[in-house]
Image (cartoon, rainbow, N blue to C red):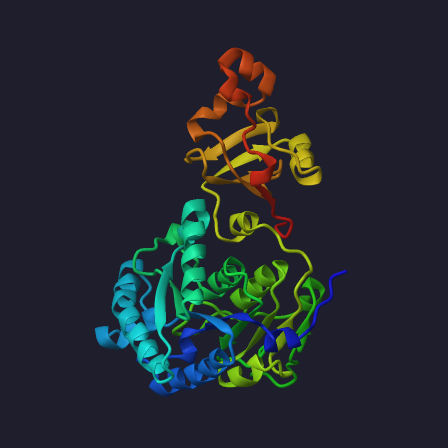
Length: 376
């Protein structure tokens, strides 16, 4: 029987992922706040000295680049964001390198894109690299590779990246540090807003108002709660609190909001398929196919597909839609988009007889399908 140890799991975690947001590291003018960085590193170094392996997922590259480039605010266009990230990433890592060096600790920069999580070979390589860095006693500093990521393959925020890294590294816990001390049921600046000390599941979030990101960040409570759901769904407990409370949070103190993990641990491939990919196209299913795929967890056969949308290649993720267009699942398709229209509505036996044995394969094997039950 699965037993959740509560906040004590944060205190006893042998491998810990800590994510810190841009607003907790930089001044409003976009420069690195040295005192804030050093204060965070003081906490992490103490935990590292106690034997805990640490992965730091750090935002702040774009924000750190605003000052050197003379930009008054976070740019809206992707090209300028990437230019700011290119300048700011070096500033950010140099600061971490200097700060951790006070404790004779080395850092290693790891830049990831959503594409690295989507493609199995990249995903496995990232897993090996992070694991080896931890074995060597290095503190990996992970960030999204904003310099090269396009809109189509961006995480969009480091909260989701942190949740996926926690699963990727088989971390024991995830701590999300923000400029807000906890999750509240409304705007914490309003009188009467109530702190949620614990979240055990979606029912605890009914009626909770979730705010968006600020001037230098991209996340907000929406992305943090989404990240917590990803991590807890993979069996990883999560604490959400302010960066100023990091020391207390890492001791398991009753501070911030604790998200209880679920007892199941989905396979890595299904987790990244659900949360690190976007459909490159769509396959529309008839009601029978929806029941087979979602209800009975069967493979998707050509006979159950009514239409195909988009341009994609074999091996790409595609969304599976019910008759009303609702996305019910996502899977890795076995055929190019141009091949599929000629297969629609035909049985695999018929296709094998007419077109050859390679067409006896299912469009998507059941092992390559993840059900998106939360999408309605």
